Image (cartoon, rainbow, N blue to C red; front, side, top):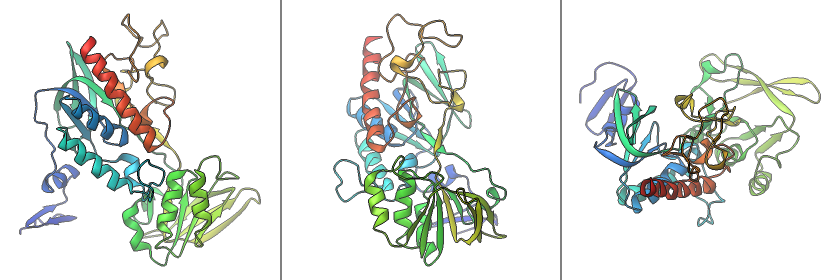
Length: 365
C-alpha cells in the first residue's frame, strides 16, 4: 500500500486514499457514483424514507428508476438509533438498518443508486427533464421525484462552529455514543429525534441532559418516548432552559445553560453536545423553479397555485396529480413537502403515493 502523504488517510483492504472526497470513499467501498446513462422513467433526488419507498415501488412497477443521494441512504431518519413506532418492528429498528434493508430491496427490484452525488439543477428539454449533478453530469428522466428531505437548523452561538466534530454534533451521531462512556452529555431539542438520541446515548454516557426551551415535552415528543425517558435513570430533563454558550480549546469542555424562569446561567462540564432543534427543507436548488411556501417547502397537488398569483402558475388544463408540483412531471414526497405529515411511516406512504401519481402522469400525458 502506498500513501500520498495527505491526511486524513482512509485505508480499506489494500487501498489507501489521502484526504479523499466522499465520492472517492464511496467508490473505494464499491459504491455506484456514475449513472448507467440513457433515459430513466423516474429520477429520485434523495434516499430518505420517501425516496427509498419510491425506489421500491417504482422499480416493482417496472419503471426504470434512479436514486441520487448526496450522503448515505436513510436521510435524517437514518441517524435514529432506534425507531420503535414503525409498523412491523415491535422491538424497534435502527434507522440505518431500515434504510439498508430498503435499499437492498430496491436494488433487488432493479433500481439504480448513485451515492455521494448531489442534485444541483433541473431543466425541461422537450418531454424530458434534465437533472444536473455536481461535476457537470446530467441525467435524463421522464419524471422526477424530489425527496431531498430536511436538515437540522443551526444554533447561532459564538464558538459553536469551531467545535463541530470535536464534541459538538448536529443530529444524533449515533456512532459517537460508545466513545462517550462515563461522560456528561447534553442534547438541545424536544422532538422525537432528540428523545431517541437521549435514550441511545444513555446506554453509554454517565448522564444525558435534555435542554428544552419549552415548559413540556408533550407537545413535541411521542408519549412512548417520554415514558421511556422517564424510566431511564441517567437522563435528566431541564425545561425552560436554553443553551447560551460553549467552551473548549481543542474539543468541547463545558456548556453555559440559562434557566429562563429564574434568569440564572450556569456553566456545566460537558463531554459532548448534540443539537436537534428542528429542520429546514433542501430546496434552495429549486428556487424560482417550483412553487414553495415561505419556509421553502414545496407545494404539491391541491396546494399548487393554478391562477394568476404573480409567480409560476400551473399551465395545464388538468389539475395536478397527487404530490405533483407546479412543474408537470415533477413530484415531491416526504418532509420536503408543504404540510407533510412528519415521521418515517408518513414519508414511506408519500413515496408510494408519489409513484402512483408518476404512473398516471407517464401513461396519461
